[in-house]
Image (cartoon, rainbow, N blue to C red; front, top):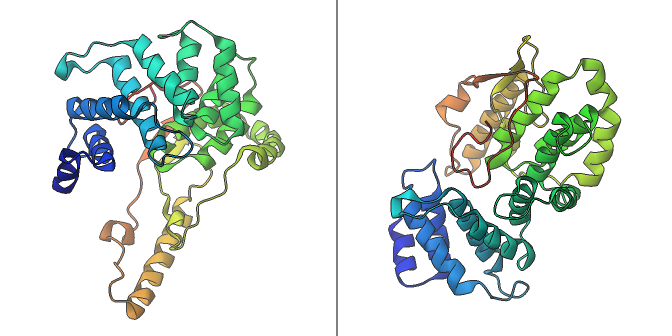
Length: 307
């Protein structure tokens, strides 16, 4: 924090950006939305017209615009900034079109779908979501899957919903995985085993078409993706793509722990697994039904992003 504050006070771009990210993080100890908003606003005002193709700061400026839009949609009461969905939409439109930012395009699609800050335009919204889905954007894929499941704005298609959300879970970055898994759990629990099996061919096809290449994992830690153990209301275990079962997780923990010991013999600086992981701490249990999850709010900073 002192290093970032010093860099920001000297006007260093990345010092300001990452300090804003730190203040905007609701899960950390330094949350201060007023300071985050002011820093993002300064970055957006100073760099709105930089070259989106040749300036390495362009993607970060786009994220600043997207973050500002989230704040403006709900307001910043700490500094008396009232909600302004029209201005939020303008910021998203600039990030989405000028900087070609995928997250801004996704958030803008949701505004068009609801007519918030922009004229209601279902066709434009679905166009953005479809394009992003084809590009492997996990949030757009999960959102579109939820629309197929509910039959809202699109013809109801449970198998398409399940296939698409299965790919979305596999594509999801860690910070988006919980709410996407919520949608997956809801659809999974609403289908019979036979219906899930019928979707296998479509899942395989869409995985090739809309999947992303997996990140290179040099240390094998991806095997420890242990999210909550999810069950349907009837007690059936929800098998989430990319998530180990309890037995597999236990084996993976043992493998990594053993590997760490071997590595430590070669390199004493290698850290050992934490006691909680080494002891195989059981994840929490989450239950779901076919009732349906609401769509995520634009710019929501809460830790629970599905309602």
